Image (cartoon, rainbow, N blue to C red; front, side):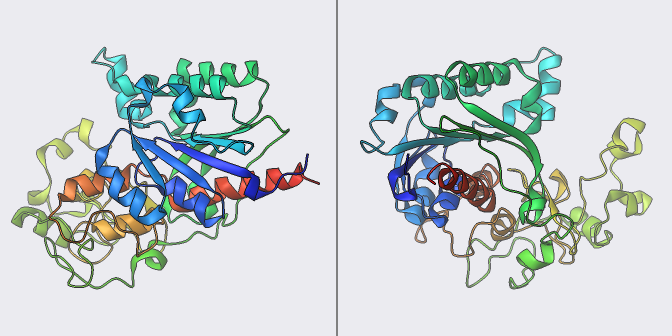
Amino acid sequence: MKISINDCAVVDLFCGVGGLTHGFLLEKFKVVAGIDIDKDCEYAYTYNNKTKFLQSDISQMDSEVIKNLFPTQNIKILVGCAPCQPFSSMTLYKRKKNQKEDNKWFLLNHFAKFIEEIQPEIVSMENVPQIKNQEVYNNFLNILNKNNYYIFAKVIQCADYGIPQKRRRLVLLASKLGNITLMEATHKENYVTVKQAISDLPEIKDGEICDTDKLHRSSKLSELNKKRISATPEGGGWHDWPEELILNCHKKSSGKSYKDVYGRISWNSPSPTITTKFRGYGSGRFGHPEQNRALSLREGALLQTFPKEYQFIPSNIPFSINVVAKLIGNAVPVTLGKVIAKSIFNHINEFSK
């Protein structure tokens, strides 16, 4: 069967602000729509990608609505990253403690239902590695097997693919055309560093907004936290502080294992995983390598491999730093989107010979 990229159309479930979509567009795929429940995603998704955004609860959607987004006769590619917080280490710990479960946990089941009812030729799903140990993931695989998909699934280190983050992700690809696989790593042991990603941005202080880019702004620090970050060397953390600056919780044996909180990032290596809390100095190793502040919103976006010109909010309205940090931290890195899209392109070419 002769197929070209022009014969394909992509729908992005749980699209967020468009990291995965943008990767596919950069690889010349036609993305016909993105779907997300979060209204805050709409501006960034549509402005940067010029693609239809549907604000909808995936768990309440009819599969026919999604199926009808695909142009007739096109190869259907259904992609998405169901919210990964339910599968994070902290959430799994809370579940063991019988705390309240998150309804997002079951969104992967709805993704599987759409696959079964729409029968896309190609599927991509990515998530945190911990999902592999959960029943909902096994159910997802069973649906793919039942519907005659060839499946590839592997936990990768994103830094191996040119993303300036030490970020492990499970990438799953499935196809009805034949065997499919993820492309080989491009940067193994030759990582893109934090310095390469963000060092050309103007210097700013904590709580300051850059004159030329309002997204290049950082959270205001308390006087105590200013002393703490001033006492932290590049790549260091709270264990480098004098005794009087250390929090009581870190003096206990139970707190000594939390070495990354209140830490500075190193210039010459990838950053830690960018989360929704990256703008908080005390939330992880999110201190700037040399400036006495936490990462700015723009720095977080660049470490997520969004282009510097990517806009997350309209220029003429005030915005919440927490909301934008959430949008950036929840996103699929654009470069990971490109890697997935390239892998699908290679797969299509292989079965078009």
